[in-house]
Image 1: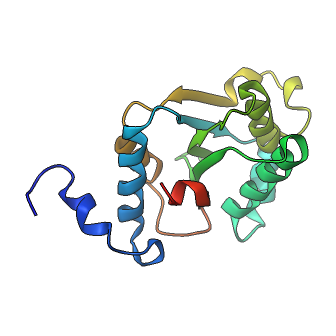
Image 2: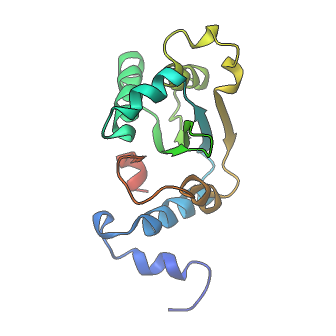
Length: 168
């Protein structure tokens, strides 16, 4: 194989998703994000009540996946494609870093669903409402995924990747 910036990607293509390490999975998704312009990156802050609730839950990422999917299926009968990681900052606060493809769904309504998942249905009453969610276009897919995983161990409890994104 000719050595270039994609040589590490070529080595992992022949493996199945389950047999890949987290790094290999994120390398493939990062290259895909670099090749498409349909994804955005996001950071979602959580309320103190939601953080306290999550401390009692075994699989934190699965809880958020179910919460977001329930809201989306109820409203649209489908979900955006996304991946996210729950991270604890040095001060102890949990938050999410992720990527999202709105799939033609109304952007403002999906943003409201994410905020609702983080702060509850009354998220608009919080003074930090406009700081709960930050969304930007993907500038560098591999770099963003590296940032997402900077302090996360290979634990499925803190990571969620939608099946559609696994099939990229």
